[in-house]
Amino acid sequence: MRFACLGSGSRGNALIVERGRTRLMLDCGYAVRETERRLARLGLVPADLDGILVTHEHSDHTAGACKFARKHDLALWLTHGTLKGIPGDVSGLPQVNIIDSHSTFAIGELELQPFPVPHDAREPAHFVFSDGAHRLGVLTDTGSSTSHIEAMLTGCDALVLECNHDLDLLMNGDYPQMLKSRVAGRYGHLDNQASAGLLAALDRSRLQHLIAAPLSQQNNTPELACAALAQVLGCAPAWIGVADQDEGFAWREII
Image (cartoon, rainbow, N blue to C red; front, side):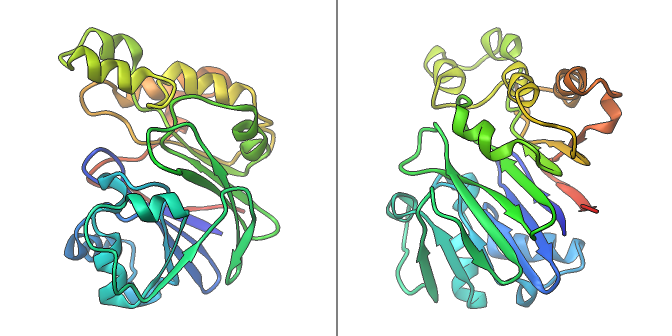
């Protein structure tokens, strides 16, 4: 199993997970042509994909999802609340699969374990991907951790973990107070230290890859995020990966 990122941040998010001949896109926050361009950077074309999973309806995760699915005849998997919350036209989609955020399902060679998260969306769900031998956990938009989130992510072989902001940078920055309160609130986004606390609560004995994503361009830096996570792991900060807004990250193999 391997995974790669097309980009991560407030201007768009998309992740690719592959096992054998099964390839899934998690979120599609870029316009159709830009998504195609970023896929090509990974050596992929849209026909290589089996479908799109959507975590929640915010535009940086869904901006291109419906148009891309229509153009390339791809299925969507998402919760009922997320489907109802997606802005714009959701008619005429090739195939829509409504998922339960507590029920495991399979797509090709991948098993998907969705789990609900506290975030300011209608019915957000994040995912653990498994091929039966390895597990990749992805958590990119939640305002706080829960015991259920920890139970889902513990023992993973790879993690993509939200490190949205440094709390001091956020609170001393230029955002209006209402936006600061939203971002730092229970249904907003995890800061570096909260992410480190979540990581510390997990069984990390199998961990091969740890990626911080998405980082706020205004209220965080890769150095701060990596330092917070590295302190938990007792590793060099350089070992921690960062999902970049423009470049994402290249293929990571889970062995």
